[in-house]
Length: 117
Length: 116
Image 1: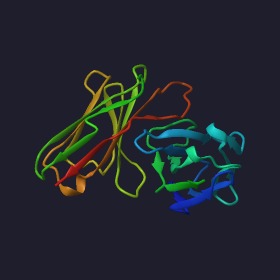
Image 2 (image 1 turned 120 degrees about the horizontal axis):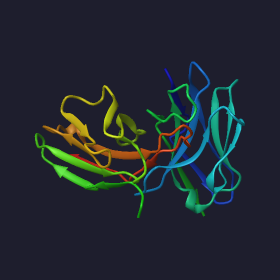
Image 3 (image 1 turned 90 degrees about the vertical axis):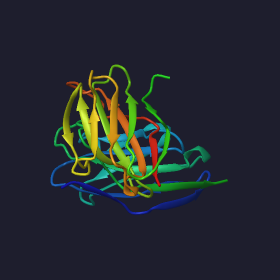
């Protein structure tokens, strides 16, 4: 079975400093992995996705994630945090072998990012 | 606004009452999903439709829950005889399933249910 584990429930950074949100996955085959962001009172929004192409994936708003099979990790990073990055971030795995299949996504428990001025 | 819309945004009900949520997906999207999110947890899959066909239901979806998408456009999620454990945010999402799709779900802002 596929699953994701988000290692931190809360992360606090100062504006302008790097962001690291950690995610480990479990899958019996090469998975499709995503990061979604949820701002207060807003719908979930896709940040980026990995589907067995390049292992370094670039997303919106300056976020990146690197797929590391040897470490079963898919950590989300950003070089410099902005106040507007404060939100809940979810690491997500698709249980399907087929790339881009979104039949039934499996979400992690989320990491709340706080950004201090 | 051409995004996914959900109604009502908030619903407070007494235990034992029935509630119904509505979701209007992005118009050209043929897939529609329902997820449930409780406090401190990530969204959990409930069910999804392709056009009007309900293709999969989670074991989380007890007999008290029923979802429909009668004309392949909007969808309703009904909960009968609500229980306090049903209190959650119910999220709707849509996507375009095609030979090549982006793997992206577009989510609504959710319908928050509180059962007293």
